[in-house]
Image (cartoon, rainbow, N blue to C red; front, top):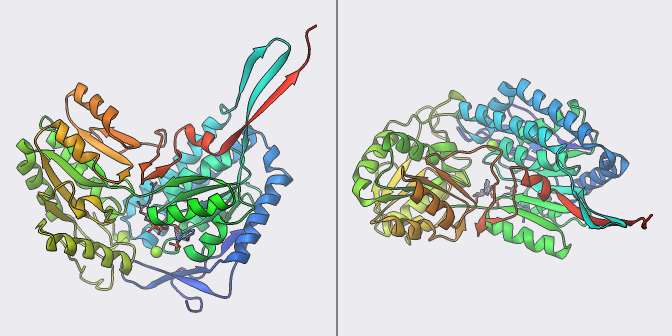
Length: 484
Ligand code: NAP
Ligand code: MG
Protein backbone atom coordinates (compact mmCIF):
# COMPACT_ATOMS: atom_id res chain seq x y z
CA UNK A 1 0.00 0.00 0.00
CA UNK A 2 1.25 3.45 -0.93
CA UNK A 3 -0.21 6.72 -2.05
CA UNK A 4 -2.14 6.86 -5.30
CA UNK A 5 -0.11 6.34 -8.45
CA UNK A 6 -0.05 4.04 -11.42
CA UNK A 7 -0.80 4.46 -15.06
CA UNK A 8 -4.57 4.13 -14.68
CA UNK A 9 -4.59 6.23 -11.53
CA UNK A 10 -6.92 5.79 -8.58
CA UNK A 11 -10.17 3.91 -9.21
CA UNK A 12 -12.98 4.27 -6.67
CA UNK A 13 -15.44 1.96 -5.01
CA UNK A 14 -19.03 2.52 -6.19
CA UNK A 15 -21.49 2.77 -3.30
CA UNK A 16 -25.02 4.13 -3.53
CA UNK A 17 -24.28 5.46 -6.98
CA UNK A 18 -21.28 7.50 -5.88
CA UNK A 19 -17.52 7.03 -6.20
CA UNK A 20 -15.86 6.39 -2.83
CA UNK A 21 -12.22 6.41 -1.84
CA UNK A 22 -10.34 5.39 1.31
CA UNK A 23 -7.15 6.80 2.85
CA UNK A 24 -5.50 3.42 2.43
CA UNK A 25 -5.38 1.91 -1.04
CA UNK A 26 -4.42 -1.39 -2.67
CA UNK A 27 -1.94 -1.40 -5.54
CA UNK A 28 -3.19 -3.33 -8.55
CA UNK A 29 -0.29 -4.79 -10.52
CA UNK A 30 0.24 -5.29 -14.22
CA UNK A 31 1.14 -9.01 -14.31
CA UNK A 32 3.21 -8.62 -17.47
CA UNK A 33 5.87 -6.52 -15.75
CA UNK A 34 4.97 -6.25 -12.08
CA UNK A 35 4.46 -2.47 -12.28
CA UNK A 36 1.61 -0.65 -10.52
CA UNK A 37 -1.32 -0.31 -12.91
CA UNK A 38 -3.79 1.47 -10.64
CA UNK A 39 -4.90 1.76 -7.05
CA UNK A 40 -8.26 0.89 -5.54
CA UNK A 41 -9.74 1.56 -2.10
CA UNK A 42 -8.94 -0.85 0.69
CA UNK A 43 -12.53 -1.46 1.74
CA UNK A 44 -13.25 -2.85 5.18
CA UNK A 45 -16.10 -3.29 7.63
CA UNK A 46 -17.28 0.33 7.41
CA UNK A 47 -17.44 0.56 3.64
CA UNK A 48 -19.12 -2.84 3.42
CA UNK A 49 -21.69 -1.75 5.96
CA UNK A 50 -22.38 1.40 3.93
CA UNK A 51 -22.79 -0.66 0.78
CA UNK A 52 -25.11 -3.22 2.37
CA UNK A 53 -27.18 -0.40 3.89
CA UNK A 54 -27.36 1.35 0.51
CA UNK A 55 -28.42 -1.89 -1.18
CA UNK A 56 -31.14 -2.47 1.42
CA UNK A 57 -32.39 1.09 1.02
CA UNK A 58 -32.50 0.77 -2.76
CA UNK A 59 -34.37 -2.53 -2.43
CA UNK A 60 -36.98 -1.17 -0.04
CA UNK A 61 -37.26 2.21 -1.73
CA UNK A 62 -38.51 0.74 -4.94
CA UNK A 63 -36.36 -1.89 -6.64
CA UNK A 64 -38.38 -4.70 -5.07
CA UNK A 65 -41.54 -3.29 -6.62
CA UNK A 66 -40.15 -2.91 -10.14
CA UNK A 67 -41.74 -5.08 -12.80
CA UNK A 68 -39.74 -7.67 -14.70
CA UNK A 69 -40.28 -5.53 -17.82
CA UNK A 70 -38.73 -2.49 -16.14
CA UNK A 71 -35.72 -4.49 -15.01
CA UNK A 72 -35.40 -6.08 -18.45
CA UNK A 73 -35.14 -2.66 -20.04
CA UNK A 74 -32.25 -1.68 -17.75
CA UNK A 75 -30.47 -5.00 -18.33
CA UNK A 76 -30.76 -4.36 -22.07
CA UNK A 77 -29.40 -0.82 -21.68
CA UNK A 78 -26.40 -2.13 -19.78
CA UNK A 79 -25.72 -4.87 -22.33
CA UNK A 80 -25.68 -2.20 -25.04
CA UNK A 81 -23.29 0.01 -23.07
CA UNK A 82 -21.00 -2.96 -22.37
CA UNK A 83 -20.78 -3.64 -26.10
CA UNK A 84 -20.26 0.05 -26.92
CA UNK A 85 -17.41 0.15 -24.39
CA UNK A 86 -16.13 -3.24 -25.56
CA UNK A 87 -12.65 -2.11 -26.63
CA UNK A 88 -12.09 -0.18 -23.43
CA UNK A 89 -13.26 -3.08 -21.23
CA UNK A 90 -11.28 -5.69 -23.16
CA UNK A 91 -8.12 -3.62 -22.81
CA UNK A 92 -8.73 -3.03 -19.12
CA UNK A 93 -9.29 -6.74 -18.50
CA UNK A 94 -6.24 -7.68 -20.55
CA UNK A 95 -3.99 -5.28 -18.64
CA UNK A 96 -5.38 -6.18 -15.22
CA UNK A 97 -5.51 -9.98 -15.56
CA UNK A 98 -2.71 -10.37 -18.14
CA UNK A 99 -4.92 -12.28 -20.57
CA UNK A 100 -4.49 -11.98 -24.36
CA UNK A 101 -6.49 -9.07 -25.74
CA UNK A 102 -8.69 -11.25 -27.95
CA UNK A 103 -9.70 -13.18 -24.86
CA UNK A 104 -10.62 -9.93 -23.17
CA UNK A 105 -12.90 -9.33 -26.16
CA UNK A 106 -14.45 -12.77 -25.75
CA UNK A 107 -15.06 -11.97 -22.07
CA UNK A 108 -16.79 -8.69 -23.01
CA UNK A 109 -19.03 -10.65 -25.33
CA UNK A 110 -19.80 -13.04 -22.47
CA UNK A 111 -20.77 -10.36 -19.96
CA UNK A 112 -22.98 -8.66 -22.56
CA UNK A 113 -24.57 -12.01 -23.42
CA UNK A 114 -25.41 -12.62 -19.76
CA UNK A 115 -27.25 -9.31 -19.51
CA UNK A 116 -29.03 -9.95 -22.83
CA UNK A 117 -29.91 -13.51 -21.87
CA UNK A 118 -31.48 -12.56 -18.53
CA UNK A 119 -33.16 -9.53 -20.11
CA UNK A 120 -34.84 -11.99 -22.48
CA UNK A 121 -35.75 -14.55 -19.82
CA UNK A 122 -36.84 -12.54 -16.84
CA UNK A 123 -40.31 -11.73 -18.09
CA UNK A 124 -40.97 -15.46 -18.47
CA UNK A 125 -39.81 -16.25 -14.93
CA UNK A 126 -42.64 -16.55 -12.44
CA UNK A 127 -44.21 -18.94 -9.98
CA UNK A 128 -47.14 -21.28 -10.30
CA UNK A 129 -50.83 -21.47 -9.59
CA UNK A 130 -51.71 -24.81 -8.02
CA UNK A 131 -55.30 -26.10 -8.55
CA UNK A 132 -55.68 -27.58 -5.05
CA UNK A 133 -59.44 -27.04 -4.65
CA UNK A 134 -62.27 -25.09 -6.29
CA UNK A 135 -62.89 -22.79 -3.31
CA UNK A 136 -59.35 -21.45 -3.08
CA UNK A 137 -56.33 -20.56 -5.11
CA UNK A 138 -52.91 -21.75 -4.06
CA UNK A 139 -49.82 -20.00 -5.37
CA UNK A 140 -46.06 -20.54 -5.44
CA UNK A 141 -44.67 -17.01 -5.78
CA UNK A 142 -41.09 -16.15 -6.72
CA UNK A 143 -39.54 -13.30 -4.75
CA UNK A 144 -36.00 -11.89 -4.77
CA UNK A 145 -33.79 -12.66 -1.77
CA UNK A 146 -33.25 -8.94 -1.10
CA UNK A 147 -29.58 -7.98 -0.72
CA UNK A 148 -27.19 -10.42 -2.38
CA UNK A 149 -23.44 -10.55 -1.74
CA UNK A 150 -21.07 -11.54 -4.52
CA UNK A 151 -17.43 -12.44 -3.88
CA UNK A 152 -15.49 -13.27 -7.04
CA UNK A 153 -11.95 -14.30 -8.07
CA UNK A 154 -9.47 -12.59 -10.38
CA UNK A 155 -9.41 -14.95 -13.34
CA UNK A 156 -12.55 -13.87 -15.25
CA UNK A 157 -13.87 -10.72 -13.56
CA UNK A 158 -16.08 -9.66 -16.48
CA UNK A 159 -17.42 -13.13 -17.20
CA UNK A 160 -18.16 -13.88 -13.57
CA UNK A 161 -19.79 -10.49 -12.94
CA UNK A 162 -22.09 -11.32 -15.85
CA UNK A 163 -22.77 -14.80 -14.55
CA UNK A 164 -23.62 -13.79 -11.01
CA UNK A 165 -24.83 -10.16 -11.18
CA UNK A 166 -27.05 -10.32 -14.29
CA UNK A 167 -29.46 -12.98 -12.93
CA UNK A 168 -29.37 -11.45 -9.43
CA UNK A 169 -30.44 -8.02 -10.76
CA UNK A 170 -32.90 -9.57 -13.20
CA UNK A 171 -34.57 -11.41 -10.33
CA UNK A 172 -34.98 -8.14 -8.40
CA UNK A 173 -32.12 -8.23 -5.88
CA UNK A 174 -29.78 -5.38 -4.93
CA UNK A 175 -26.13 -6.43 -5.03
CA UNK A 176 -22.87 -5.78 -3.22
CA UNK A 177 -19.84 -7.14 -5.08
CA UNK A 178 -16.35 -7.64 -3.65
CA UNK A 179 -13.90 -8.22 -6.51
CA UNK A 180 -10.51 -9.90 -6.02
CA UNK A 181 -7.73 -7.58 -4.94
CA UNK A 182 -5.64 -8.80 -7.91
CA UNK A 183 -8.11 -7.76 -10.64
CA UNK A 184 -10.84 -5.34 -9.54
CA UNK A 185 -10.70 -2.75 -12.35
CA UNK A 186 -13.30 -3.96 -14.84
CA UNK A 187 -15.86 -4.63 -12.09
CA UNK A 188 -15.70 -0.98 -11.03
CA UNK A 189 -16.21 0.10 -14.63
CA UNK A 190 -19.26 -2.18 -14.96
CA UNK A 191 -20.82 -0.58 -11.85
CA UNK A 192 -20.25 2.88 -13.38
CA UNK A 193 -21.85 1.77 -16.64
CA UNK A 194 -24.81 0.29 -14.73
CA UNK A 195 -25.54 3.78 -13.36
CA UNK A 196 -25.31 5.20 -16.87
CA UNK A 197 -27.73 2.47 -18.01
CA UNK A 198 -30.30 3.75 -15.52
CA UNK A 199 -29.98 1.35 -12.59
CA UNK A 200 -30.89 3.39 -9.49
CA UNK A 201 -28.15 4.22 -6.95
CA UNK A 202 -27.54 1.41 -4.47
CA UNK A 203 -28.81 -1.37 -6.74
CA UNK A 204 -25.26 -2.42 -7.71
CA UNK A 205 -22.40 -1.56 -5.35
CA UNK A 206 -18.75 -2.56 -5.80
CA UNK A 207 -16.35 -2.50 -2.84
CA UNK A 208 -12.74 -3.56 -3.49
CA UNK A 209 -10.65 -4.81 -0.58
CA UNK A 210 -8.82 -7.81 0.79
CA UNK A 211 -10.63 -11.11 1.25
CA UNK A 212 -9.96 -11.29 4.97
CA UNK A 213 -11.24 -7.74 5.46
CA UNK A 214 -13.88 -6.60 2.96
CA UNK A 215 -14.72 -10.18 1.86
CA UNK A 216 -15.17 -11.47 5.37
CA UNK A 217 -17.15 -8.38 6.45
CA UNK A 218 -19.50 -8.85 3.50
CA UNK A 219 -20.23 -12.56 3.88
CA UNK A 220 -20.76 -12.27 7.62
CA UNK A 221 -22.91 -9.12 7.43
CA UNK A 222 -26.36 -9.82 8.94
CA UNK A 223 -27.99 -7.54 6.33
CA UNK A 224 -27.06 -9.86 3.48
CA UNK A 225 -29.76 -12.34 2.41
CA UNK A 226 -27.91 -14.61 -0.02
CA UNK A 227 -24.23 -15.13 -0.89
CA UNK A 228 -22.78 -16.08 -4.25
CA UNK A 229 -19.13 -17.07 -3.98
CA UNK A 230 -16.77 -18.04 -6.76
CA UNK A 231 -13.25 -19.02 -5.72
CA UNK A 232 -11.17 -21.66 -4.00
CA UNK A 233 -12.42 -24.64 -2.00
CA UNK A 234 -10.60 -23.44 1.10
CA UNK A 235 -12.26 -20.00 1.14
CA UNK A 236 -15.57 -21.55 0.05
CA UNK A 237 -15.63 -23.65 3.21
CA UNK A 238 -15.02 -20.55 5.33
CA UNK A 239 -17.79 -18.67 3.53
CA UNK A 240 -20.27 -21.52 4.01
CA UNK A 241 -19.40 -21.45 7.72
CA UNK A 242 -19.91 -17.66 7.92
CA UNK A 243 -23.23 -18.01 6.06
CA UNK A 244 -24.32 -20.70 8.52
CA UNK A 245 -23.89 -18.26 11.43
CA UNK A 246 -26.52 -15.97 9.88
CA UNK A 247 -28.49 -18.88 8.35
CA UNK A 248 -28.12 -17.43 4.86
CA UNK A 249 -28.25 -19.39 1.63
CA UNK A 250 -25.09 -19.61 -0.41
CA UNK A 251 -24.03 -20.60 -3.91
CA UNK A 252 -20.51 -22.00 -4.10
CA UNK A 253 -18.69 -22.16 -7.46
CA UNK A 254 -15.32 -23.63 -6.46
CA UNK A 255 -12.26 -25.25 -7.97
CA UNK A 256 -11.84 -28.04 -10.47
CA UNK A 257 -9.50 -30.56 -12.05
CA UNK A 258 -11.49 -31.28 -15.16
CA UNK A 259 -10.56 -34.17 -17.45
CA UNK A 260 -10.70 -34.38 -21.22
CA UNK A 261 -11.37 -38.03 -22.06
CA UNK A 262 -10.06 -38.89 -25.53
CA UNK A 263 -11.29 -42.25 -26.80
CA UNK A 264 -9.60 -44.26 -29.55
CA UNK A 265 -12.15 -43.30 -32.22
CA UNK A 266 -11.89 -39.53 -31.56
CA UNK A 267 -11.39 -37.13 -34.46
CA UNK A 268 -7.94 -35.93 -33.44
CA UNK A 269 -7.84 -33.14 -36.01
CA UNK A 270 -10.72 -31.48 -34.17
CA UNK A 271 -9.87 -32.67 -30.66
CA UNK A 272 -6.21 -31.80 -30.20
CA UNK A 273 -6.39 -28.02 -30.78
CA UNK A 274 -9.29 -27.93 -28.28
CA UNK A 275 -7.32 -30.01 -25.78
CA UNK A 276 -4.48 -27.50 -25.99
CA UNK A 277 -6.77 -24.49 -25.75
CA UNK A 278 -8.55 -26.01 -22.74
CA UNK A 279 -5.36 -25.50 -20.70
CA UNK A 280 -3.85 -22.50 -22.51
CA UNK A 281 -6.99 -20.39 -22.02
CA UNK A 282 -6.22 -17.70 -19.42
CA UNK A 283 -2.86 -19.47 -18.84
CA UNK A 284 -4.67 -22.38 -17.20
CA UNK A 285 -6.17 -20.10 -14.54
CA UNK A 286 -9.69 -21.26 -15.30
CA UNK A 287 -11.89 -23.16 -12.84
CA UNK A 288 -13.02 -25.54 -15.56
CA UNK A 289 -9.63 -25.74 -17.30
CA UNK A 290 -9.10 -29.07 -19.06
CA UNK A 291 -6.04 -29.82 -16.95
CA UNK A 292 -6.03 -33.62 -17.27
CA UNK A 293 -6.05 -35.63 -20.48
CA UNK A 294 -7.24 -39.21 -20.09
CA UNK A 295 -6.39 -40.91 -23.37
CA UNK A 296 -6.79 -44.36 -24.92
CA UNK A 297 -3.48 -46.26 -25.19
CA UNK A 298 -3.80 -46.73 -28.96
CA UNK A 299 -3.69 -43.00 -29.70
CA UNK A 300 -1.63 -41.81 -26.72
CA UNK A 301 1.66 -41.22 -28.58
CA UNK A 302 -0.01 -39.36 -31.41
CA UNK A 303 -1.98 -37.11 -29.07
CA UNK A 304 1.11 -36.23 -27.03
CA UNK A 305 3.22 -35.58 -30.17
CA UNK A 306 0.59 -33.23 -31.55
CA UNK A 307 0.18 -31.41 -28.24
CA UNK A 308 3.94 -30.95 -27.85
CA UNK A 309 4.09 -29.36 -31.31
CA UNK A 310 1.30 -26.92 -30.42
CA UNK A 311 2.91 -26.04 -27.09
CA UNK A 312 6.31 -25.47 -28.72
CA UNK A 313 4.78 -22.91 -31.04
CA UNK A 314 2.83 -20.98 -28.42
CA UNK A 315 3.67 -17.27 -28.51
CA UNK A 316 4.11 -15.93 -24.96
CA UNK A 317 3.86 -12.23 -24.22
CA UNK A 318 2.06 -9.32 -22.63
CA UNK A 319 -1.70 -9.76 -22.81
CA UNK A 320 -2.13 -6.40 -24.46
CA UNK A 321 0.10 -7.54 -27.40
CA UNK A 322 -2.40 -10.38 -27.96
CA UNK A 323 -0.09 -13.41 -27.74
CA UNK A 324 -1.33 -17.01 -27.39
CA UNK A 325 -0.37 -17.07 -23.71
CA UNK A 326 -0.07 -14.21 -21.22
CA UNK A 327 1.50 -14.12 -17.77
CA UNK A 328 0.00 -15.58 -14.62
CA UNK A 329 -1.81 -13.15 -12.36
CA UNK A 330 0.87 -12.68 -9.66
CA UNK A 331 4.29 -13.65 -8.36
CA UNK A 332 2.51 -15.76 -5.74
CA UNK A 333 0.64 -17.70 -8.40
CA UNK A 334 3.85 -18.20 -10.39
CA UNK A 335 5.63 -19.60 -7.34
CA UNK A 336 2.69 -21.91 -6.68
CA UNK A 337 2.63 -23.23 -10.26
CA UNK A 338 6.40 -23.73 -10.48
CA UNK A 339 6.28 -25.46 -7.07
CA UNK A 340 3.62 -27.91 -8.27
CA UNK A 341 5.79 -28.76 -11.27
CA UNK A 342 8.86 -29.24 -9.12
CA UNK A 343 6.97 -31.53 -6.74
CA UNK A 344 5.74 -33.59 -9.70
CA UNK A 345 9.24 -33.91 -11.15
CA UNK A 346 10.55 -34.97 -7.74
CA UNK A 347 7.84 -37.62 -7.57
CA UNK A 348 9.06 -39.06 -10.88
CA UNK A 349 6.46 -37.58 -13.25
CA UNK A 350 7.83 -37.10 -16.72
CA UNK A 351 8.00 -33.54 -18.04
CA UNK A 352 7.76 -32.97 -21.79
CA UNK A 353 9.23 -29.47 -22.21
CA UNK A 354 8.23 -26.14 -20.68
CA UNK A 355 8.42 -25.22 -17.03
CA UNK A 356 10.02 -21.77 -17.05
CA UNK A 357 9.69 -18.57 -19.07
CA UNK A 358 11.03 -15.09 -19.05
CA UNK A 359 9.76 -13.02 -21.92
CA UNK A 360 12.46 -10.77 -23.29
CA UNK A 361 11.75 -7.14 -22.54
CA UNK A 362 9.47 -8.09 -19.62
CA UNK A 363 11.73 -9.90 -17.15
CA UNK A 364 9.59 -8.95 -14.16
CA UNK A 365 6.39 -10.46 -15.56
CA UNK A 366 4.83 -13.56 -14.06
CA UNK A 367 5.25 -15.83 -17.09
CA UNK A 368 5.32 -19.63 -17.13
CA UNK A 369 5.72 -21.80 -20.22
CA UNK A 370 2.99 -24.33 -21.03
CA UNK A 371 4.11 -27.72 -19.79
CA UNK A 372 2.97 -31.32 -20.30
CA UNK A 373 3.59 -34.14 -17.85
CA UNK A 374 3.17 -37.51 -19.57
CA UNK A 375 2.24 -40.94 -18.19
CA UNK A 376 0.92 -39.48 -14.94
CA UNK A 377 -1.11 -41.94 -12.89
CA UNK A 378 -4.67 -40.82 -12.11
CA UNK A 379 -3.87 -40.88 -8.40
CA UNK A 380 -0.62 -38.87 -8.65
CA UNK A 381 -0.48 -35.59 -6.76
CA UNK A 382 -0.24 -33.58 -10.00
CA UNK A 383 -3.39 -35.27 -11.39
CA UNK A 384 -5.24 -34.48 -8.17
CA UNK A 385 -4.35 -30.90 -7.28
CA UNK A 386 -5.67 -27.80 -8.98
CA UNK A 387 -2.48 -26.16 -10.26
CA UNK A 388 -4.15 -23.11 -11.84
CA UNK A 389 -1.44 -22.66 -14.45
CA UNK A 390 -0.65 -23.93 -17.99
CA UNK A 391 0.21 -27.42 -16.77
CA UNK A 392 -1.32 -30.49 -18.37
CA UNK A 393 -1.16 -34.12 -17.26
CA UNK A 394 -1.64 -37.06 -19.61
CA UNK A 395 -2.95 -40.38 -18.25
CA UNK A 396 -3.15 -43.35 -20.64
CA UNK A 397 -5.97 -45.86 -20.13
CA UNK A 398 -6.86 -49.27 -21.65
CA UNK A 399 -10.61 -48.88 -22.19
CA UNK A 400 -13.64 -46.69 -21.46
CA UNK A 401 -14.17 -48.22 -18.01
CA UNK A 402 -10.65 -47.27 -16.99
CA UNK A 403 -11.19 -43.85 -18.59
CA UNK A 404 -14.32 -43.22 -16.54
CA UNK A 405 -12.65 -44.34 -13.32
CA UNK A 406 -9.70 -41.99 -13.97
CA UNK A 407 -12.01 -39.11 -14.94
CA UNK A 408 -14.01 -39.41 -11.71
CA UNK A 409 -11.00 -40.02 -9.46
CA UNK A 410 -10.54 -36.55 -7.96
CA UNK A 411 -12.22 -34.66 -5.14
CA UNK A 412 -13.56 -32.19 -7.72
CA UNK A 413 -16.63 -32.48 -9.93
CA UNK A 414 -16.84 -29.36 -12.08
CA UNK A 415 -16.63 -30.29 -15.77
CA UNK A 416 -15.43 -32.89 -18.24
CA UNK A 417 -14.84 -33.20 -21.96
CA UNK A 418 -15.39 -36.43 -23.92
CA UNK A 419 -14.03 -36.96 -27.42
CA UNK A 420 -15.58 -39.81 -29.39
CA UNK A 421 -17.65 -40.52 -32.51
CA UNK A 422 -19.57 -43.26 -30.71
CA UNK A 423 -22.94 -41.83 -29.71
CA UNK A 424 -23.68 -44.65 -27.24
CA UNK A 425 -20.39 -44.18 -25.43
CA UNK A 426 -20.93 -40.41 -25.39
CA UNK A 427 -24.25 -40.83 -23.59
CA UNK A 428 -22.79 -43.42 -21.23
CA UNK A 429 -20.14 -40.88 -20.19
CA UNK A 430 -22.72 -38.10 -19.80
CA UNK A 431 -24.63 -40.35 -17.40
CA UNK A 432 -21.69 -41.74 -15.45
CA UNK A 433 -19.42 -38.70 -15.03
CA UNK A 434 -19.79 -37.25 -11.55
CA UNK A 435 -19.58 -33.56 -12.43
CA UNK A 436 -21.79 -30.58 -13.17
CA UNK A 437 -21.16 -30.18 -16.90
CA UNK A 438 -20.16 -32.56 -19.67
CA UNK A 439 -19.04 -31.41 -23.10
CA UNK A 440 -18.85 -33.91 -25.95
CA UNK A 441 -16.59 -33.13 -28.92
CA UNK A 442 -16.15 -29.55 -27.69
CA UNK A 443 -14.79 -27.90 -24.59
CA UNK A 444 -16.81 -24.74 -24.58
CA UNK A 445 -20.39 -23.80 -23.87
CA UNK A 446 -22.61 -20.76 -23.56
CA UNK A 447 -24.60 -18.81 -21.01
CA UNK A 448 -27.59 -21.12 -21.63
CA UNK A 449 -26.02 -24.20 -20.04
CA UNK A 450 -26.49 -24.77 -16.29
CA UNK A 451 -23.25 -24.48 -14.35
CA UNK A 452 -22.72 -26.14 -11.02
CA UNK A 453 -20.15 -28.15 -9.16
CA UNK A 454 -20.35 -31.48 -7.39
CA UNK A 455 -18.15 -32.81 -4.60
CA UNK A 456 -15.53 -30.20 -3.62
CA UNK A 457 -16.44 -28.04 -6.63
CA UNK A 458 -19.38 -26.63 -4.68
CA UNK A 459 -23.16 -26.45 -4.89
CA UNK A 460 -25.93 -24.30 -6.29
CA UNK A 461 -26.45 -23.42 -9.94
CA UNK A 462 -25.60 -20.37 -12.00
CA UNK A 463 -25.99 -19.65 -15.71
CA UNK A 464 -29.07 -20.91 -17.64
CA UNK A 465 -32.68 -20.31 -16.67
CA UNK A 466 -31.92 -22.00 -13.35
CA UNK A 467 -29.93 -19.00 -12.05
CA UNK A 468 -33.19 -17.04 -11.80
CA UNK A 469 -34.43 -19.68 -9.36
CA UNK A 470 -31.13 -19.51 -7.48
CA UNK A 471 -31.53 -15.75 -6.98
CA UNK A 472 -35.16 -15.97 -5.84
CA UNK A 473 -36.98 -17.79 -3.09
CA UNK A 474 -40.46 -19.25 -3.11
CA UNK A 475 -43.39 -17.99 -1.11
CA UNK A 476 -46.49 -20.12 -0.81
CA UNK A 477 -49.81 -18.25 -0.62
CA UNK A 478 -53.38 -19.39 -0.50
CA UNK A 479 -56.55 -17.35 -0.95
CA UNK A 480 -59.85 -18.96 0.06
CA UNK A 481 -62.83 -17.33 -1.64
CA UNK A 482 -65.56 -19.85 -0.88
CA UNK A 483 -67.92 -21.64 -3.25
CA UNK A 484 -70.59 -19.55 -4.92
P1 NAP B 1 -9.84 -17.29 -3.54
O1 NAP B 1 -8.52 -17.13 -2.93
O2 NAP B 1 -10.78 -18.25 -2.93
O3 NAP B 1 -10.48 -15.84 -3.64
C1 NAP B 1 -11.75 -15.63 -4.19
C2 NAP B 1 -12.34 -14.38 -3.60
O4 NAP B 1 -12.59 -14.58 -2.21
C3 NAP B 1 -11.44 -13.16 -3.69
O5 NAP B 1 -12.23 -12.02 -3.94
C4 NAP B 1 -10.84 -13.13 -2.31
O6 NAP B 1 -10.37 -11.84 -1.97
C5 NAP B 1 -12.01 -13.53 -1.47
N1 NAP B 1 -11.68 -14.03 -0.12
C6 NAP B 1 -10.53 -14.56 0.34
N2 NAP B 1 -10.64 -14.87 1.65
C7 NAP B 1 -11.90 -14.55 2.03
C8 NAP B 1 -12.63 -14.64 3.26
N3 NAP B 1 -12.09 -15.15 4.36
N4 NAP B 1 -13.92 -14.19 3.28
C9 NAP B 1 -14.49 -13.70 2.17
N5 NAP B 1 -13.85 -13.57 1.00
C10 NAP B 1 -12.57 -14.01 0.91
O7 NAP B 1 -9.71 -17.74 -5.06
P2 NAP B 1 -8.76 -17.11 -6.16
O8 NAP B 1 -7.37 -17.53 -5.90
O9 NAP B 1 -9.05 -15.67 -6.33
O10 NAP B 1 -9.33 -17.82 -7.46
C11 NAP B 1 -8.93 -19.07 -7.84
C12 NAP B 1 -9.91 -20.14 -7.40
O11 NAP B 1 -11.24 -19.81 -7.84
C13 NAP B 1 -9.62 -21.48 -8.02
O12 NAP B 1 -9.78 -22.49 -7.06
C14 NAP B 1 -10.68 -21.61 -9.10
O13 NAP B 1 -10.99 -22.91 -9.47
C15 NAP B 1 -11.83 -20.93 -8.46
N6 NAP B 1 -12.82 -20.53 -9.47
C16 NAP B 1 -13.99 -21.20 -9.56
C17 NAP B 1 -14.91 -20.86 -10.54
C18 NAP B 1 -16.20 -21.60 -10.67
O14 NAP B 1 -17.12 -21.06 -11.27
N7 NAP B 1 -16.36 -22.80 -10.16
C19 NAP B 1 -14.64 -19.82 -11.42
C20 NAP B 1 -13.43 -19.16 -11.32
C21 NAP B 1 -12.53 -19.52 -10.32
P3 NAP B 1 -8.86 -11.35 -2.30
O15 NAP B 1 -8.30 -12.21 -3.35
O16 NAP B 1 -9.07 -9.96 -2.73
O17 NAP B 1 -8.12 -11.47 -1.03
MG1 MG C 1 -4.14 -7.10 -11.87
